Image 1: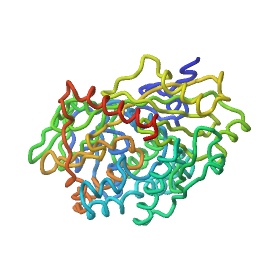
Image 2: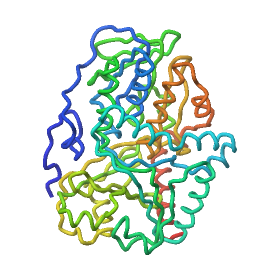
Image 3: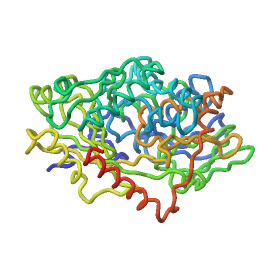
Image 4: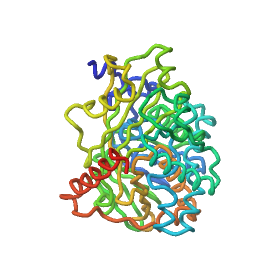
Length: 433
């Protein structure tokens, strides 16, 4: 296996995305002193979404990224536009009440809309395609999908449609599934090209983005400031958008999320007939298991297949050891096909699987913990952070009011306890109960 056939984008992990990204020279590291309206920590989807929102509103914005724009999950994920959250709206209603569920329901399609709007407005070349398919292994999962569909329709989402076993082949050529559901408002993209395109759009409106500028200290007082090894930014507002790559910079919030790794791989290029047979509608696909697989076509006719989970951000010794067998179960005809790229990335998981927004002080905001639904949710929450800074905090207030908790067991036991829970749900997936 040639795991990394090509790589010419230094500073990023060796991935299919890095190898095929639109060329972007490294931005300078931050040095010296600077004053600005808003300083954003993190150059992923959340931070860049907020930066673009604020730049469009006329704010002076500085983004400090420890590595490269899109270095973390934003540039490594499966590239799927999946609407909603990691908890369904009915669960949100049971936990938080009808008012909160209604508010989150009204926002639940906006992340995908933001992506499509920005791609069109700024001419971002990120291989945007429309449509997603949720695949069910058993009748129980079909019933659960249908219930979710009805809940969504009550809240105005009219893009969902159930798929019978006989119709599965319109979307994916595999005998593993008994049915499913399509989301015509879903889709897929080249995520690294998307976040880079948004970053260039923000810069075109005056935002300053610095790479290789790891933040070493955040002063959260009345006049907040952000320090790096070689400089200091004084700002009216600070937005903390580091997500799973925040580390121990701010323990008060990092204790309420856990980095979780997922592995992704991409095959060699397949001929037109093969890729058309496997995924004839060119929809992205994810299955309905608790520890799920997700896959899609790329613009150059590869199958990009992801899955697996590593609590605490731990990867298996062999990145393809979990997902390659699953890919061959889904598509046995791909036995012997070369895997040309394999990589992993961490997303931030919260205990509730609901994103966590709030303030560390009066003018220091944070957002993290999209829990596997980050492509769309980060775009929504980045916009909401921008709204809050601009004095329109109504939607921010909804999110920050949702309770969020530290993982039980602290840093020492949060990984084994969470893994035990995942094992239990994995057993239920296999048994279909």
